[in-house]
Structures are given as structure tokens and as C-alpha cells.
Image (cartoon, rainbow, N blue to C red; front, side, top):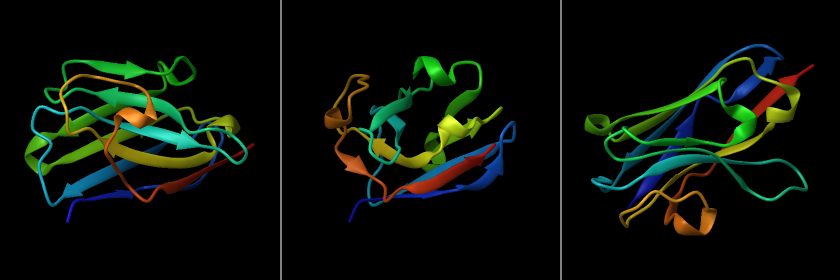
Length: 124
């Protein structure tokens, strides 16, 4: 059974930092991109950051550029999201996702496996 398990969410003050981790089990995602999405109450799920299998290609949504960094440890089958200079508008449930096909995509429907989500709350 394939599972993606997120950790590292929590409550932080504006300007603070959090590091999310997503550990995959049940299969490896060799050659596949992985990423982070988020969903705030009453809003659609949106892409935050995507990373290729090699880590050589990344994508960030405009609102997090320069503040967030995505990375992966393929040997550990784990992807990370370092979030710095957090803002109240970053408050959301953050989801890890993985593709099973080649290519780097940024739409939620292009991803085949999802974690259960971890809550990130940024207070002002």
C-alpha cells in the first residue's frame, strides 16, 4: 500500500519558520516529480512547490518565491518544504503529492498519490 505521510506542521508567528517533511512508503517514485499543495478554508487547492526526480528542476508559486524551498532525498523517499518568513496568508492545510508518470506538472489532477495533509497556522 502506497502512503505519503506529512509531518512538521503547526502554529507559528508571522515571520517564523517551519519545515515540512513527506515520507513515502510502499513504492519509490523513481523518475517522478513530487510536490506540495495547500488548501485554505473556502479556497481551492493550489500548488506551492514542485520538484523533479533529480531535484534539478523546481517550480514555486509566485507568492512563496524567495521564502520557501523544496528539496528531496530520493534515497529516503522523502520530500521537504522549508518555509521561512511565514505570513498569515500561508495558513492552510499542506498536502504532499506524487506523480507516477514522467513530466513536471503543477495542477492537482496531474498527481496520483496524496498525503493526508498537515495544518500550518501562522498568527499575526
